[in-house]
Image (cartoon, one colour):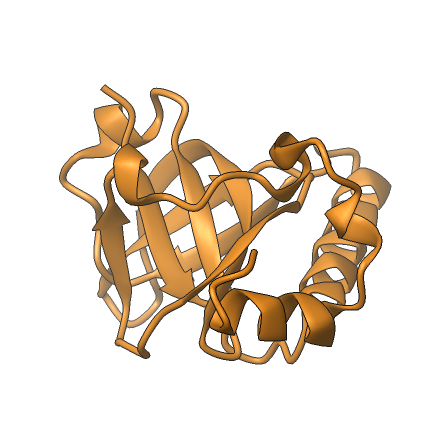
Amino acid sequence: MTLHLIKLCVGADSLQDLRDWVAERALIAVAAGLEPHSSHVTRMVPKRGEELLDGGSLYWIIKGQVAARQKLLDIKTFTGGDGITRCELILGPEVIEVTPAPRRPFQGWRYLEPDAAPRDLGASGANIEEMPEDLKRELAELGLL
């Protein structure tokens, strides 16, 4: 059964910031002869890894709203130079915009059940991706998107 993660996208002020960061990481990886994946390191290791890798994604919260997702490709654990075990979430190179949904801030990541996950924005059939990000945010806050 598929399961997702949800996390604050700290440091990104917009969806474009996230996309730029992912593109930059992909270029660095390709230049090093690696696959164009990005990754995110966290201290907590998900215990439900099999479910997450069964088609799960990492949903990103930007400015108080779920804004995008990246497919989870792998979960690796490693021990840092400080002796602390950490988790590296290997993410697909595509940032998929989702229907904006308000979320309160929290620390770390949380599991996100598939039925609670926002749908992909392009799945509605409308050409909403072309809308300015501020307008999409306002429409979502009003419950119109």
